[in-house]
Image (cartoon, rainbow, N blue to C red; front, side, top):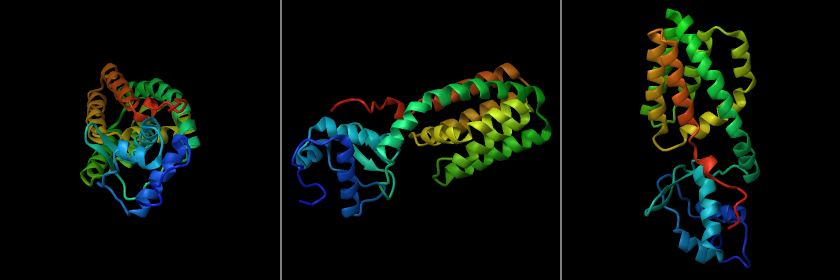
Length: 235
């Protein structure tokens, strides 16, 4: 039995379970695709409840570090289990709903205005962003930079200085929501498909369709694992 997964002397909080799992991954030199011990095995070897283990695994899943397959166990998605501090994760979860609300309100209007005001150069920039994101996804990447370029191109096409300023003021928070969303399994491809629908409505100069497509897209972005995690839940 490894030292990292040696029994704890008393029940610990899930933050401490996280540290033991991280130590085990480093000790065993595990990487992407490798399977973690089962919940039952982790609980037995650490001397804690399965609820505590499950809470720790949920935190790792919310950060996109593991893939929990129902009935199949938990698998690493990265070569290094570098989980963010729990306090940072709690803060991100607290502010994420408001960021997503702001994105839906502002970006829906930006898409509508872009459909009314776009130029050929704007359409070229949007197409370039779509192509860039597509290439990222083909390389097995989440498409973060392409996504950023796409939304930036729509903001530029809307030609609204004040709305663009609002977007810049929450750029850091938008980046967080983008990262959270594109870490979801299958999300990069789905987001790219939705981007194409938004772009088509803008290309056709259809403000209502552009706004509706953007609203559906941001609502999809809002469906992230982090919001399903309750940091106050007692194991």
